[in-house]
Image (tube, rainbow, N blue to C red):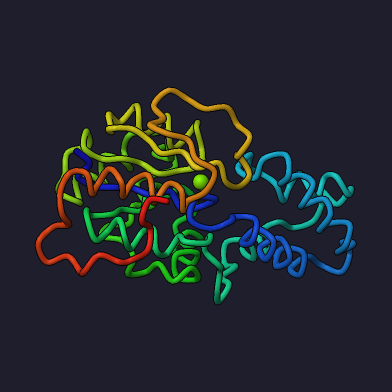
Length: 242
Ligand SMILES: [Mg+2]
């Protein structure tokens, strides 16, 4: 019995590349005139393409274009303060979260700089979409997924036991492994974004190509357990299993 569903943010509910594109442009704009903007931007894309969560991307990009002496504080600030007015969620993402929420409480569990992640939530229009939002960096960077902390915190704040939660996410090493280590019911993996080609991990209930498919998979199981909770809105016509 699924009592709550937790969602990852980056590359699960929207393509993170769309945010990174604007962020790297902002970083390049913040560089001094001594730095070749086009070469720096190309280096940022190249280094980030090797893994956007590898860290020190700005330093490594500067090193690549022989601009190591450049002051990095303004560049890091430009990255952290990049706050686009609007980001586009994946197709069906808004409907998936809303339809699941008609049945059970939903949480967002996301790693990354707190201000950056909060800006993404706003730009995506997800401020009111979840019953609880857990940004793991607020607990300390050491609690980034797959640490159990953020999963257990989300379950506790939703008032459900962790063993009855399902995690939906794109990263086998973070979302799937984290769900398993935290004792969740399991994870629904979506093969979207930067890590789509990564092999699966133990703990996957199912692996699907899109969030829409994940939503239909979840709703089929949630509805098999009975009607929506009392007080839930009339069921949307969207997301009937195909
Ligand atoms: Mg992700």
